Image (cartoon, rainbow, N blue to C red; front, side, top):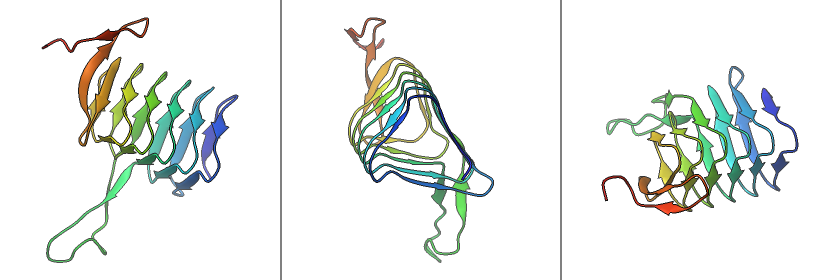
Amino acid sequence: MNATIGRRCMIGYGVFMQIGRKASVVIGDYSSINTGCHVVASTKITIGSNVAIGEYVTIRDQDHLFTPKNGVRGEGFFSAPVIIEDNVWIGRGVHIGPGSLIQSGTIVAANSVVNGTVGPNELVAGAPAKAKRRIGPDGERLPMLDD
């Protein structure tokens, strides 16, 4: 398995990692991945330092291709690296899809679906995840700039 796990990380009970032969998973220092998470890499998944990942989160850098004529079987995959920067909190039950970038200082609310880029210092929620508010340097709740 091509995984690098930083210092003083916590990997919870029943965490499942599937890492392809040419893929890698890199986890920074002081991060935690809680019970029941799935991490599936066919290219690369990077999890920064001081990242807290709640229970039953799914992080995948690949997704099935689909055609109405053939369905999903035998259609192949779309794959793009996932990057979770430092100091991120990911709530329980979140799905993070291929090509996602979650920038530093962000909170992803429970049961959200992330596909794409999430800005720094934001609280995002929903399916798909959208910015709900900004997070100030001392954790204060700030409105979005267009409120």
